[in-house]
Image 1 (cartoon, rainbow, N blue to C red):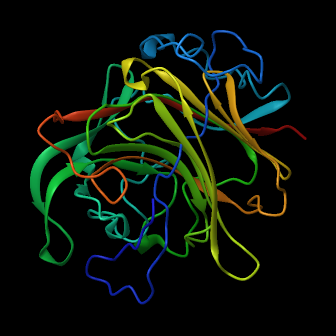
Image 2 (image 1 turned 30 degrees about the vertical axis):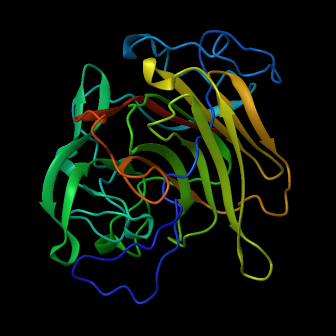
Length: 310
C-alpha cells in the first residue's frame, strides 16, 4: 500500500512513502508439515479452528525447522491491548490516524480494538468521524503496531528485530473495500524497505498477496511480489508465517511454502517492527459498496516471533 501519511497538528515536511499493509506473509500451522513445494489449493489449505486450538506459545514454528528461540509473543488472552507491546496508531500520531497516501477511508482509533473470546478484534465500522485537518472519514477501524508513537521519538520501539520468524494466526473479514494486512517497516521510520507478510482484498478473500518493497542503488522504489489463489481465507483461522534471513525471505500459509525470495542484495538487513491493520477503501481495494457488511472484524488469535538461537 502506498502511503503519504500526515501528522495531526504537526506539519509533515516530506511525504512518507509507506506501503502500509502491503502483502501477506505466509503461515505456519500446527496440524502437520506439508511438502515445501506442494501446490496451494483449497484442498490443502483448510480453514482453521477457533482460538482455543492455537497450540502452545512455547513451541517453535513448524515450517521453519528447529533451533528457534521465542523473542516476542502475545496470545491476547487478557481482554485488553498490552500497551507495553503495542501502539494503536502509526508512529506519526497517537490520538487517531489514517493513511492518506493510500486514500484510505477509515480513521484508526483505540476504540476499534478489543479482546474477546481469546482473540484480538480489529473492527471496521461504518461511522463518521472527524480526523486530520477536520476531514470527515466515513469509517473507523483498528491498527496495532510494535513501533512507537511520535511523541516517544527518539525512544525505542515496543519491539523490533533483525531476522527471524513471524507467525500470526488470524481470521480475515470478506467484503468489498476491506483490506486486512500484516507487515513490517524499518525501525528508523523510513518508508522503505517494507515486507508485507500478508495482504488480502476483501472482494477476493481466496487470494493472498505477498510483497517486498525496497530502494535500489539509484534511490528508486522497487517492488517484487507474488499472489497465490487458495481457499476462502475468511471462512476460518489461518496461520500466516514469514521466515526472514540475510539470504532469503520465505512466505508460508498454514505450513505451506508460498514463495521464496533469494536476492540477498535487496533483502532488508536492519531492525523492523510489526504492524497489523484493517484498512477500509483506498486506491487498491476500492470503496465499500452495498454488499459490504459492517461491522467487519479482523480477528487475531496470536502473534509470535522467534529468532535463531546462538
